[in-house]
Image (tube, rainbow, N blue to C red; front, side, top):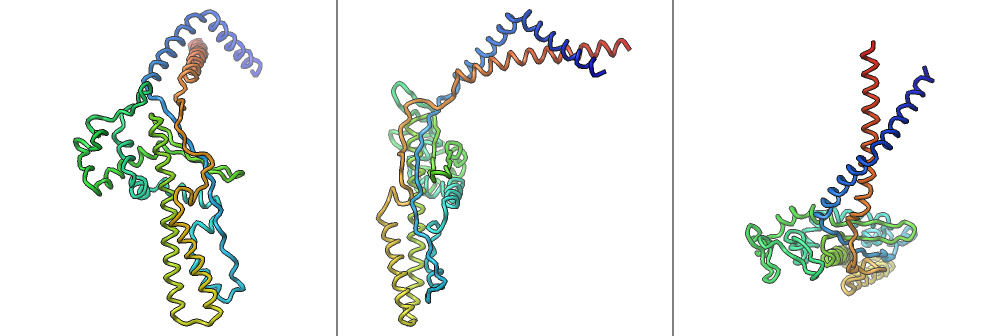
Length: 318
């Protein structure tokens, strides 16, 4: 019985090979026609351009050991250093959370008024003239005015509703990855316009950096308010020295967060660049793979047809 099955399989394979040899011209012609149609469909797709930036998270100071300190509890309460005591994995998780946050997108990224027109109003990019074309029914880039149903966006503070709706369109342009070995973070933006790919990437990096700065200043202020109140209680001299030290550290933290801008949270290893060549779609490779697929599809279809035909013939003979 086993020998019979093996013979049947060998015979079916031989049939498929003979079919391929006999009908090779027809198979190739069908595959060429199908792959040509595939290529023309791909031509209707917009080119995509990717701008990337490589960043290194700045080494934030770690929380010191306070077990033997006479003011250890005050230190633990007053430091409140959120990201400064996080390891790289936690910080990457925080960045991922921000990029997935609608409120962060609306409040921080859309604070740059040039971002929303890119997300909602962009229509196409002309590579010859290197011009971005906006939908004439949505946005006028010369007057910087929203049109039609989007005219409400001309009013200050009215971006929230449209901002929420545009979040998913924005999110599909963003990718990020983290190299554990080098502790380097790569953020990429892919867009039909190379100009807007770079613009959006810079907006994202600046928004994250600004958010971290504001959080650090807020936390430093909370810590300072707490420490000043403790000083008003006239604690022992040794505790006063400790509180004064913590006040100095928080003032220094607040000063650095207030002064440093673009490179506060990130050390920029590779700045966002203007992509000179498209990142996709790779029409040649896709077409070639589709050509191979159509050949295999025809051969598999014939093999299945032959198997069913033989089974049906055996069934009829019973």
